[in-house]
Image (tube, helix red, strand yellow):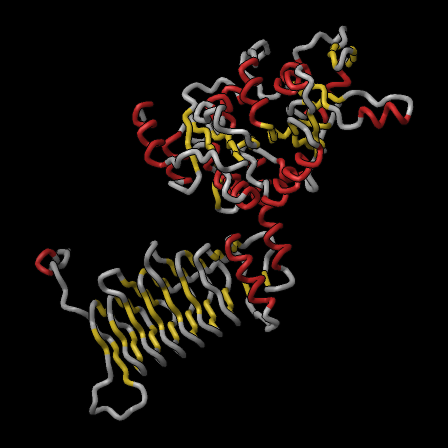
Length: 499
């Protein structure tokens, strides 16, 4: 898409920057990720069915409330913008050339009038899909308590040091006396990118200056340093706006590194602090499919750990329950009644499903869209229930849906009804399907846009836009409709093959 069209799209989808808000989050989502080897933007790859950039947005929204959220887009900008959509307090900006993280933040800051704003700015990578609101709240609290002008969220690399491609956090070395040691704990001199470390001369020390003193580090010391930069920062805006203009490109990549701000803040006599999160996994980003899969596995385990003592999940490694449903399930559990919810291996439960007590989903059941369950429901293996946005599948109490059934669209199923194997039921916006109480549907049957009254037994029938009710003259409790087929269309095109 041409850049002029991107700017039109940004205008359409963006809110106005609110100068009354004290917090602003910048999410860096301009990169594509060459190593991911996909036509899909790296930012739109999903972790537990949610695009990574949306997960970062959700974490910011949960932790920072109604903050301004600026999302920097670039490659695949249209897809990223439309995935996030038009949301309150969200502003999109376009980084036409990817010239580094420092340049991306500069692009974001261009929309802010420095004469009108004096708040705090947080920066997050768009691929950090496991970060959560709790981590951001803790980071925000530390930033305030440290009274720093800039704070870096750092991690501790747990793998082999030769596989660590993160930027290293260089701190002032500990001193011999307790007084000196305490004085220097937490002081960050700079962050040096891995590629710049790898480019150093093995025979010469790396020399940095801090508060009038020089500190020497060997290349080996730097490479073996396990404290790494996560790419998450907090700044006091006036200092950020003033100093980011001084970032240069004198590095191997010839890019503007946001990490250079640490040196600039220190040189300016400002305070730079650093803190690590409670859990290291929240800092994970990805550049390839294997790490993305690992992150998805962590998200699955987090969901399982929250639910494992509330509901029954057959296989902790093979199920899906959307994160939006967790609070609903936990709230039901707090009411004190046993939920008796069972989730079979391979079952999929989408975000808009409304669950209820005594729900059994057997192996490979698929539920997606607004599906509202009554109590005491059994859905057997390989059944598929789904509907589009604005549609609803509503299922009453004491209902059984047998193996392999397909139910789609606007459909309402009454109480004490049994849908046996081989049945397909669909309803449209114009012609919803309504099935009454005490109904049995079995055999190879298809029902579309029809109304089925109470106490009907349907077998081996195709019913399209029909009303099926027991005749007044019939006194039996259940009335059977079997082998109903509509008149064929296009019969003139059909003839027997000749031998």
